[in-house]
Amino acid sequence: MSRSRSCVLFYLLSLSSALSVPYFSPFGADSLPQTLFTTQRQHKPADLPHSDPTDSFWTHSPGANPLAAEGSTGALTDNADVCIIGSGITGVSAAYHLANAVEGGAFPLGRDNEVRAVILEAREFCSGATGRNGGNLTPVSFAGFRKVETLFGRVSALRHYAIEHYSASEMVRIAREAAWAGAVDLVEGGHIDVMLTQEQLAEFTADFAAAVHAGKNVNDVSWLSREAMNVGVRTQGYNLWPLKFVTQLFNQTRNSVASSGKVDLRLHTRTPVTSISPLDSNSSNNTSSSPAHRWSLATPRGSGRCTSVLHATNGYVSHLLPHMSGLGPDAIIPVRGQVLAMRAAAPLEAIGTASGAGNEGYWFPRPVSVGGDVADEGIGTILRGFLPQTFPGRYEPGREPEAEWWATTHLEIPFVGPVLDRSVVLDSHKGQFIAAGYAGHGMPRAYGCAEVAVQMIAAELGGWEWEAPEWFPRPFLTWSVLCTLVSFRLRRSSAWDAQPSTHLNTLAAWSQARWTSAPHNNKIDLAFDLWTPVATLLATFECFQFQNRPGSWDG
Image: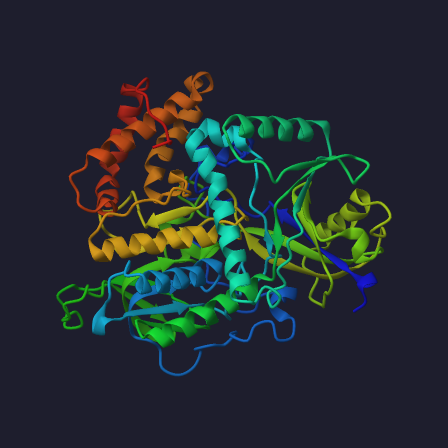
């Protein structure tokens, strides 16, 4: 295709279907519906991924998914040390990190002095949100900094942005060092946020000033004038083809473990996990001196036994963890999104290679586009009008899209850590972990979250203490929700308006005091010990009892 026939893919969230509330929005909970603070369990657990989803440009282009049906026939792996549910960026990154940890001696070996790991995927390989999104690998530079700092403290605010820069830079490094940057369409074109109103400009300016004051590195930021486009800000950013990246990462990992012999990595697509049930630790299946198989994963092809389970299913997580449905602070609910491919009226040289965002959508140039199905004409109408209005002369009004489809996305920030359910006994999910709930912003977060989840699995199996990486935000941890449960209620009280940060600091101090003074050898076990209805009630009481006690998320 000639360079004059470039196209732009444009993405817009359709917020009418559902919301996900794992924690506080980095852009402030004030903008969220009050139902988030008053109603829970209004949504049933997620169904399995639809067996016949709409076509996506990213997954249905010729040759784009060579692993589509990998492991979908033949014998099913019936036992493993680690079962990873989901083959998107989180699941495959977890396999990559697990392999590296084993090679580095940071993961305990299982039976036969190896680690058996299996990835289970309900549909085709990488067919969920990762495979169906546009590949906008953009670490947020400073947007929303004031809200994040108010809610979590300065150090944690800086970490909110550090994990994105870490994940993006590591993904780019891997692709370049392995010499497959071209194969995954990696482009370093930067990212542009467009300010369409004076209010938006004022918000960005204030966030920028707050980030600078906090000591954040903003060397990648440059401000644009209206003459250049619209008033906006340009920051570091990349684009890539997510499915191709995940495919390359899986193949690289599988090839590396095959040569070392320390990890037996399997992939089974078209193998949905329908339920998870505990195994008897004294059963005949658990005769090895290695950690006992604790969980049985049922699939239409049979069941498999696992010692540890990682939920990497993002919007579908509540299918297997029904307590994470609803609208409460521990819920993850899918949100629908839509992508449109529109042919430009100007050559690629005039458009450039930068991605951009504005008016709750983002766009990015690509040299090629192929077909797909129309999903929602109403959203398509909005998308058709946005680019010609934002870039006069570069996109013709009324020009029809090349392709449209649905994608799955989420709101708020992730859950990372052991699976916890405040409504049941202490260790009812012990050995199960989660990394999910990416707020439609998983590309620059999932890689790092998967790394932390694997570190926790290794610590739990090895009996050593897990230590958070410096770049990892502590509010992402699943046990941080213990404080969130109370703060949601506090936010509705009149006292919250006067001292919002004091209440959060109180909750953080309560959690941190128990964390640092605990006699437990493994703090992942402590997370389970804290996670009881009694502890939740105690947190509520102590939040008010010691509301002036100092503390913050900066620990």
